[in-house]
Length: 127
Image (tube, rainbow, N blue to C red; front, top):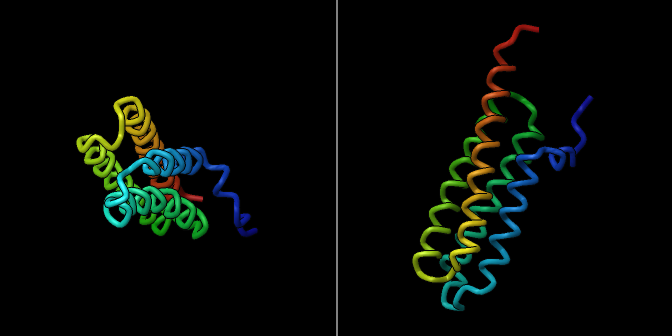
């Protein structure tokens, strides 16, 4: 039986990545207008990529394809974290929001790592 199309929403890692994306969108609403097509756009796109690749990999359902998309998510998460750092250093993100964003990003990174390990272990088991 095929996976339900929207079943990825049940994944804790996707839920936390989605929370991070929403937090980033809210934080970037206050960025300067001149950053709209620069840092604002970049940080939003990279955060959306994290959750989108989790969902896409899940939908594909095979070990190697799933792992490939999770690796893309890991890269997009690192990109998001770099953008968060830049925005904080430029004074666009206050310390309290910065701490919440970095904590959430660390949580997503941890969950991605655990999911990748689980998939890799399960793909090596014999039926």
